[in-house]
Amino acid sequence: MILALVFVAITAPEWPAFGDEAHQLDALIGQRHFDFLVWEAGAAAVKAEAALTREHTYWNDAERRQSVLDYLELLGQIRELDRQIEQIYVDPDVHDPDTAVAVIQAELTQKRAELTEIQPMAEAIVQDQVADVLRDEDFALLGQAWPPVMMHMTPLPTILIVSPRDRIDRIYGIPLKHGLSVAEREALETAVFNQLNLSALVVPIGGLGVYPSMIMETGNLNWLAEVTAHEWAHVWMTPYPITFQYIANAQVRTMNETSASIVGTEIGTAVIARFYPELLPPPASENPPQAVPEEPPAFDFRAEMAQTRVRTDELLAAGDIEAAEAYMEERRIFFVENGYNIRRLNQAYFAFYGAYADEPGATGGDPVGPLVQEARALSPSLKAFLQTMAPIDSLAQLETVVAQLKTER
Image (cartoon, rainbow, N blue to C red; front, top):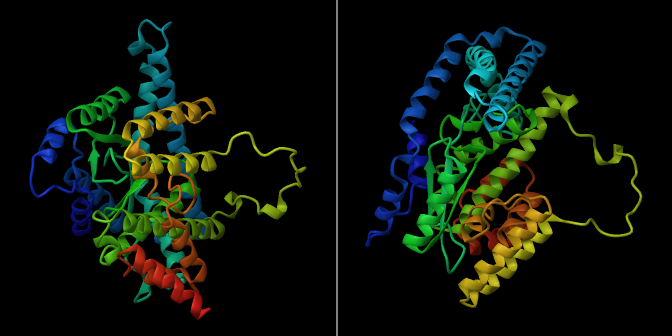
């Protein structure tokens, strides 16, 4: 609960000391704020149930593994039933959708009840598996992973990201309740633009670093292991400057998110390799050789997005906001034409996605991501990497640390 309150503090809007901009924004959001206290109460009940039973601790590895796979299979069936119901309601040839979905809805209700029954156990097993790998990486206290791995799969809030129009900078990041329609998101973004002269975007997320970590429901075990480790890394970094400056400094926010992404990828891959090896993608060397193409791929999303970010930064630096926004809209249409359904491409888009710099794209020419990746490459272990990153609270300090790591090689 304490860490949850810390999270609310660091993800709440950065209220200005004077003026009423924040109050106007709050009024525009209205009753669409996400209620963390209600969510925490429900998650705590699930975690308490798992802690009291601990039945899975008496199972062998094969039984624990199968329990997780059964849970994910059931979740996949539920998502398919949801899809069928949604399809019936949007089908213009179905004149009585309530009757048409009755049988499917009954099956869905039954399966949801089954899922609720087995979810605490499945989550506890995944937590333990991630903790086992973290212990091997020396993230342990008295023989146990520290901080303890705690996560809960749940429908997630969306986040309202707000940036000034004259630069790319996340100045508000406000959790909104789950289930807002596209029309509601569009209306809120437009209202922020028209009434506050700010760039806004409501974005989906895969997890939140509250405690227990909030994880999106998924049938993809590789993704689940990775995001569980990613959110754990945020918890690990909570008492350090790299988290203290999360809101105030966009570059430090990128360091924080990129570090967590690196941890998530490495730990998640190790979890799958140990407990679910059949789910590992084949090594590149095992893939059949491919003929060298005569021409480069027709569309490279990351390269095109990096180009978009660089040009947008140039236009904004020159003070031409309207040209930058017109350019981003042209590029959005270009991405849609190439199969990437980006609903809105604006300053807020880059303010959010640019923070995840373990892979190039929305970061454009930002040096932070490459420096964080270099720090990991120069670190002897994952723990040493996080210990290196934890005290950093500025780009200048990151540059100094990376230079020092190079001299120690």
